[in-house]
Length: 112
Length: 109
Image (cartoon, rainbow over all chains, first blue to last red):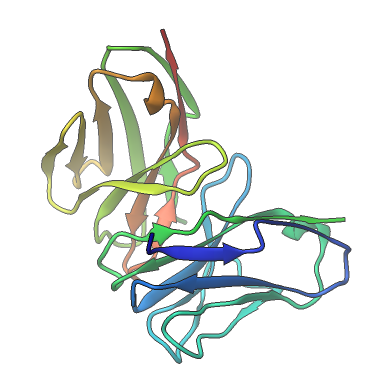
């Protein structure tokens, strides 16, 4: 089934290590997003990309970086993980910013 | 600041009707979305309102009043599979979604 694929599904990472969360979509959507979801809080936007080659900062960008080399892929990198980055990370895409967003299954990341 | 408020948890009976409210204060308004999220799964799109009034889609309806900064999601003929969290999100002046924390709906037989 077409959609968004995130990898890995879950990961335990030592503090200070780097990690890249992968996100690939096959719907040819222009816009892609990275969110984190923490208990008791709404989804919070980390970074977004309205089209290939461009990226922007969301509400909580510190400690994270992204790239958008092509339409399909939007990896999220933690350069030096800290325990406060323990969360569930969702990648999403939409045809444009006016359309509903479609979500991947998420990556559960624990930083120890 | 921007704020989306929803009840944390609601309980309803199978076969009944439940209304989940959402109030918002955002910098600009370009539409309101409702998503459903089952535990451990991804959010899935339910409905979208940009003009005042009621949007009906099968057992689910969503209402919007922009002057009151208020929306509700109405679920009819509740089924056990409707047990999930329901997320309200507003698209702000930058066309980014601001999300509420979600309402956990528990359906009892």
